[in-house]
Amino acid sequence: MKKIFQIKKQRSFSAVIEDSFRFFKMHAKNIIKIVWEQNRIVLTALVITYFLYVYFYFGQLNNAFTFIRGNTITSKTEASTNFILVAVALFILILIFAPRFFAAVAGYFRAYDEQTGKVDVGKIQELVRKKFWGLIGLTLVIFILAVLIFLFTSLILGGVMVGLGGTIGAILFFFIYIFMIIVGVLYFGLSYYVYFFEDIGFAEAIFKTKSYLKDKFWYSIGIFVLMGFLIWLISLLINAPVTLYALLKSLWMSKDSEIAKYAGQGDLIVAIISIISFIGQMILRILMIISMALLYFSLREHKTGEGLLDKINQIGNNEDTGNF
Image (tube, rainbow, N blue to C red; front, side):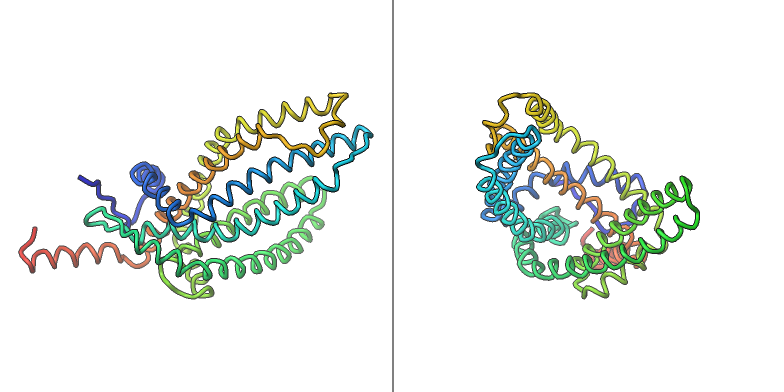
């Protein structure tokens, strides 16, 4: 028997956090399977390219240590070219995969039947295809807006800091700036969900996000920050082997008198460990998308009461047909 999960309802602060982990526990396996089925080729290419990126990155790091020690680098040009090409390929693959990944995970909510607990995989496939270019376009619009806001606020905050002067101005500038970054990431991040779930235009989605956050601002900020912090803590554990190995390798490289012979060479071990970490981080992103989706539905329910109306209509339909 499938466990039923109600998506469209208002949730308290703690309920959003708890239900995010509960939904993840119930459906993570199916979501991962769907993400893989929808992105086999691009995901395989992405993993391989990321492997090469990390491998060549350590080749560049070897070059840097060799140069610092005043040794001649014979393979610098070739290694640098390989690294740049792989980095460009990685950027392109991320640009392709990111909207497909988001559409597959968020689409799981749209394809989920709250009455039966079943998921229409065909609907998810259609959403991935239908929303791909729209999500890229929304990302471009948000990027432009974010840059303009960044420049504008930097001028204002910079003027405030100069006016106050000294340590107080610097501290105030720092905390206000951090807060504005959090608000900006939350606001624009939530716009993706408004756009995706409501099938509206870019501008309408961005403006509508404001109306959702207006009455539940601190509630939303708190959930976003707490979930971000929890996921950050988990990611530290996932990244610990890579971080520890990279640190020890860097210390060894900085002291090795024979370091010149490693110039341009990558590191196979750290590349393999990084792939495991990369997959773990991807799974954590599923949890973050789930929590933001539940936050969106809670805000929408507070604003529209749509979920409650749906339940009332379902009760009415059951009574009309004699089903209880």
